[in-house]
Image 1 (cartoon, one colour):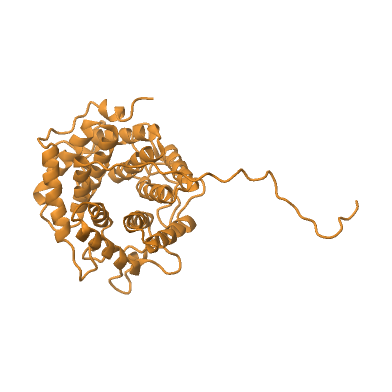
Image 2 (tube, rainbow, N blue to C red):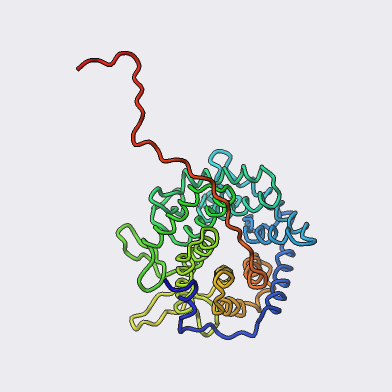
Length: 380
């Protein structure tokens, strides 16, 4: 097997050059973190958007910075947002809806999707680690229970929502696998870890294409849409975390393959940013598609995490290039800044991920049920 990250390093495609270095990364992070802090709105509930959806990325950033000197205010605001979001957790199932409804017919607000519940599970696990408060663990347990009952496919993987088809979407699975690994590491439960790893294998077997990208497929294996940027990004993040927590070098290699596909197929050379999809023409070139700031921020975060785990410089260059395409719009007050900030925080100060001490797995079950007879056994 090639060395981790070699798949990206060997790519002939090069990210546009950028003059940014470590000092610029820190300055960019400080600027972005200030934008996130300015987006706090106590009247809405904290790090909450205008439509009432809490920003999981802003909460993640706040809890991360809460560990630093003078980070108490960041931590307080992040925890206040989590506490406010409890109103969005269903008291029966334990699952989260995305946001409060805007009217009586706003049915989209009541969707309990996999990506929303996965990201909020990750926030709750981080809050439990940061505070030791058992309430956050109980809330996380309830979300995990909802995911287990409603969103898990027993063969491996997660469906995108309780209602709809059961085909695997790589983006939703990436978020869910990432959260499941976070929850497994927090509890030390090897069964949770093993299901996350089985889910990685099923998504890879089902969705990875010989052209080097993850695809969404229908009931009969047919491709149902163009390759999506977020499918590569979210599964890539889950693969990097799996490699770090579980010591699986093949997952880091796979993450490198997805990053190379992003640089070769999704990168708009004129803008230096990633397109939302990469649909090839008959001549093999890629049709141009929109470049969205929020998706590029998530892409930069994945590339920064891959660079931290593998040391591949091209991943750092691609993350900085994506930022350069949107830097002029950075003063817009929205929570995309939180993902950008997390990306540049990772470039400047990579996180240290400590492998958990996994619980000893239970013994093998007996080969068959033990049948207890009560009364006399009739003669034959």
